[in-house]
Image 1 (cartoon, rainbow, N blue to C red):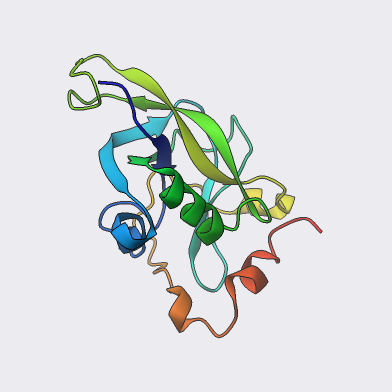
Image 2: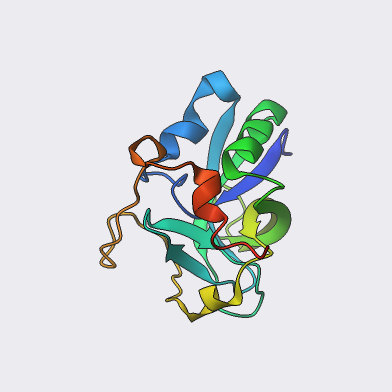
Length: 169
């Protein structure tokens, strides 16, 4: 079966069971369909930073882990909504990346691992000291790291003010 929309790789709070998953499945902002789980073909640093414990995927290929996440097929309306939600292209940059999936339900029923080209939101122009933080392979808000994500409505400052600390400027 061919894809009818664009594929988005969710590695943080948008994944199933995470605090912002409600945003990706909300039909009022466009359509999204869960396809499968997968992991990045290349290693990248996934960190948790800021006083709000936000997961960031840093564009530093070869460092970190083959990050795990969820693949969603989205329509143009949902993609545009996610671009705005993620601050693309001001802070995060939506970039194509290879995601390896091993799921018999991933499009054509093959049981062999296959690679899908998916959009992922990277923090590309980041302060290098972020590479000193602990890297994670799989983000879970309820993980043993104890760094629970603080949702936007509970923050005294805007997301723009939070992320500005981590972007080169």
